Length: 328
Image 1 (spheres, rainbow, N blue to C red):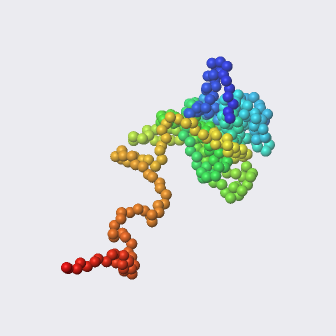
Image 2: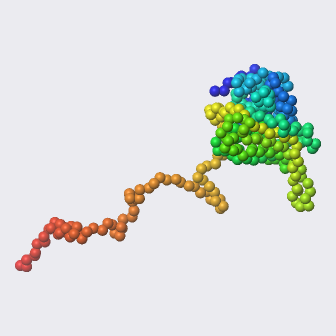
């Protein structure tokens, strides 16, 4: 049962209406935090991710003594205080030198978390690519390549795909201008081997490669332009670390859709090309032995000739004998 808050004035009422559940939710706001020890590489990575979500993001520079996988109450507090449903926490230590933890919340409670261990040697920031930068607020194309993302069983890679989609999605719309497609986010997962599948060491798991490309359209002499991709940055290689899977009851509540006035599609009813409505009826198995048919002589069951002779004898005996008339 959700907690109900009664507004005291018009200002608080507008704020509560803004945070209230909607049929079409607002774009998710991401909050960027850093721990007490955070390397410069991790800070640069958080800064690049924040630059791509600047219109729907908040970044705190203060150090926070948070250990998300041990106590996530601070995440819930920051989520409710800043009305953010996505949290990115950067930290560094000897065991996990460059770590970025993605967390999602529902009703300002932690839904799930996933740790991305960044490779500091292959990391390249946006500033290191001398290309034209994409304006803030553009929605990207997203490509996920690798069999690890297509697993029917939920795992760390399917969760990573869901989190990255939520992070880069932006505002939901049913139409988009082709001219607004300015960059593309490509996430590639290496093919896991048998040794990597059975190991729990993050260093032995498949690498998750994130690349961002700007889209350029040039003249081709034809009706359709020639499309070229140019690396925009950032360039990040991750290995997935610790994971906190969502609670089944909370996930079911989070996946519920609001009832709208849209007409639901009726099952087993279709319309043909002539506009006639066709319906399909599913019936159980019929017992044709008890089916009532038209009574005809040809459908009557044949009887043995012996039975017919016995019945004829009985009928003859039962008939009364006629008296003969005597002439006077």
